[in-house]
Image 1 (spheres, one colour):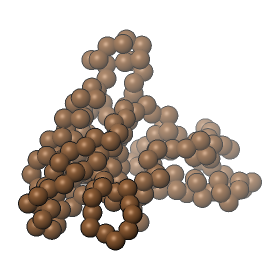
Image 2 (tube, helix red, strand yellow):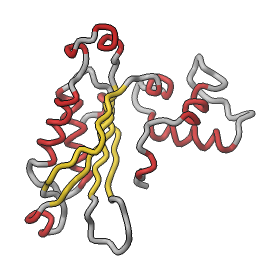
Image 3 (cartoon, rainbow, N blue to C red):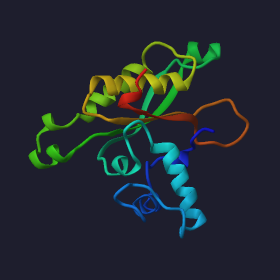
Image 4 (cartoon, rainbow, N blue to C red):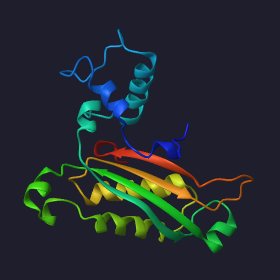
Length: 184
């Protein structure tokens, strides 16, 4: 099942409460004594945020860079019209990394510049045609992780605001989450 536009934030206050309750030393949530809603939130969080050697609490506590609403014209899609005429794509990126040193030093060399990630997105979206949005998102995520070793995880959302469907929509798209250790 695809993630939808309501899932733009990596974690809500409810997620944080569910993850930090009961057993803070282990990062695990005991289901005994919790509400069904808390168990459902925890189940969803584990599915979205767990990864090799990255527990839920570790991921929740990470800082991140946020890029929202990046708009580019690209030629991605399965249909010949999409490849010939192109269309607008809207991209959101979250990049998790430790921002503590940058916060203390106020020095750009202690972080990743937003413009570096912006350029990666621009190069991929305006670059060679891909059939699937999944491929566009995957290229953005992997390129970001490979070029910036200090980034531990990246979430990329690729939206197509102008699609041939009968109905009113903001956009259709995909959202992926990639960890440093899962690069392929």
